[in-house]
Structure formats: C-alpha cells, structure tokens
Length: 130
Image (cartoon, rainbow, N blue to C red; front, side):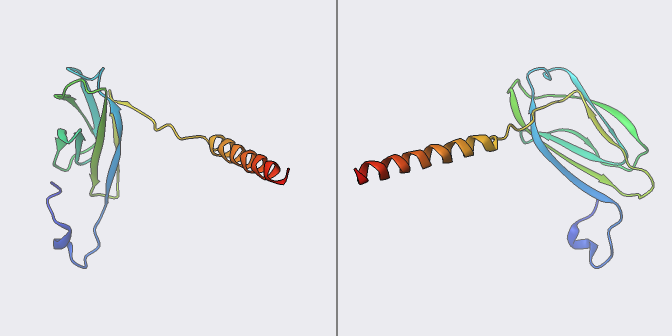
C-alpha cells in the first residue's frame, strides 16, 4: 500500500509520517451517502474490515468523495492509515462520518463501590464485636 516495506527501509531514516487512526463510527446515516477525505498524499479508510476508500499516490491537499458500500451496522470499527512523505505541507480531514466517542466509567463510580465495600466491612466488624 505505501509502496515500500519497512524491511526494505534498512538504516535509512524514513521521511514523513505514517499515522494509524482507529475508533468507532455510526453507519446508520452513512448508507448510500458520501463521506469526504481531504488529504495531502495517501490514505486507506477501513470500516468493519472492508476498505471503503483508498488513495495510493502523492498529491497536493485534495478532497475526494467516497461512497460507503457497507450495510447499516449502527456501530462499526473504523481504521484509517494516512501517510505524508514531505515535511513541507500536511493535510488530513474526514467529513461525513459520525464518530462515536468512548464513554468512560467515571471515577465516582469506583469511589462509590469502594465506599460501599468499606461500609460493608465496617458493619461486619461491628456485628462480630457484639
């Protein structure tokens, strides 16, 4: 995909950058609709293991529209590989995809569980002393 293998690079420093972005997208509103990627150089967008968009060339910042070909899976895994070969200009923007932010368990939940456990131990100790 990148036109070279890491094994073939040897001791030469590799110019530019390769990024791997992962996450979750909501595909229900995406079926039959386009999403756009503005990129300087190349990229590959994979949704649920299927390559949905790919540009394998060096280019100035260009916006390319792609049509999602998968089904309405609601939540789907997302991966984007992006490479930049120059240190002069870099651009990356994805529009039309509904990214889903992970929802972390708040620290207050763990604190509450710890407090309840402590109260339970205190009650047991008190009952054993009586």
